View 1 (cartoon, rainbow, N blue to C red):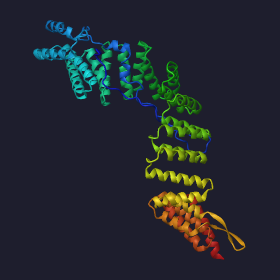
View 2: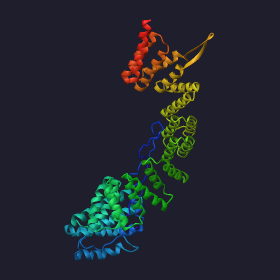
View 3: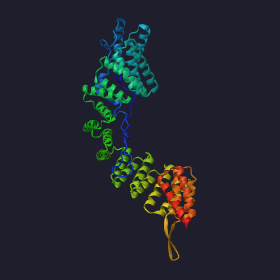
View 4: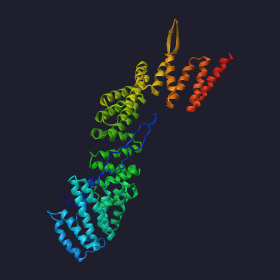
Length: 516
């Protein structure tokens, strides 16, 4: 059985960093890909991990020796009671359940005259019993004992406000609470404990930890620096301080600290990702790649890290490398968001890497088989059709778009894209003469009319302008007048100076035709 007063019953989960900021591809002429990893706002170390440090344990062992000025003076009756209690709490045969009963009986017999130290000791015993109950998987009993510990520590403080150990004990309980609101309650107790002389590394570390969670970065920095002054070997406190620097956008300082930590433990993936954050913040994509590749070859790169690496490779024009990394992400974590995988294919296509994008879509189809939602399937079909169109494979694109419309007759993108295929000008043999005309004017117009009736304004806008261009191609006056009316409808949805100029050009052509 552990005899540590402050053993914790839970841990604060430390997730890997995710998103920091978006970086735009330099000189690419395109919108920046999402180069995002979140700067970690949760401590990389949990309180229970900090508790494993022997120096921390030493600072929080049981002690029933009063401290002058910061603990109440024991009267003769209370001293006699402690002489009886001491054997129950010490040695290998300690019995906390018996001590708990003895303390409750003593407090009841003393009534309002009960010494504050009795409440403190009962709180400490209840806290230990809470730990024991947690180890026995009895969560309800553990919670009950912990609540009793808090109640008794508060009674000790009410009776003796300068009770240093009661303040520190209460601060640690609040710090380890699952209720984040309790973190704020911990800070004043820990500050008071420090003011009362608890100036050890562990107390300052607790104070820094709580201020970090509350976003009080300046206070956290001061407390953590003091903790390191008292115990420079504590890596947990060192990394918390590095996180504070990162949160304050002091990237060079944070980078220097994480580099020092990495020298002590090259396999710590969290520290490598924190390093990536410092490089991202300063748009140093080369060093981002180096750090991410280290994680990748250590087989410790998480899915989002791989997508980030792939995005950087795309922006560097290294499309094959991007494709390789994306495929690794998809194969290693097919249960991760399919939307991320589709976005990867879409990103490759937007940079003209059509073969690589198609390969990603093929890998998605294989690895996500049976789990694809209808809207995701539609998104992939649409992307395939756009790739085919971009590669000049109009017939293949038309087949895919027809599949989309069979499943979703009101898909505005598909209606407009298929209409574009049928509206494309082609050469047609007419006897001995070769004419240029729309591939299928009637089919194109029918599709555009359907799109114009949609509630989706963007699809409607695209259909109206495309329909107008189709009619202008006929060059007769009636068609030109219809084109103007369509463009005026488009202007009502979203005004555009270029469209207005186009309307004026058509009107001039109509006037010229009428004059003849």
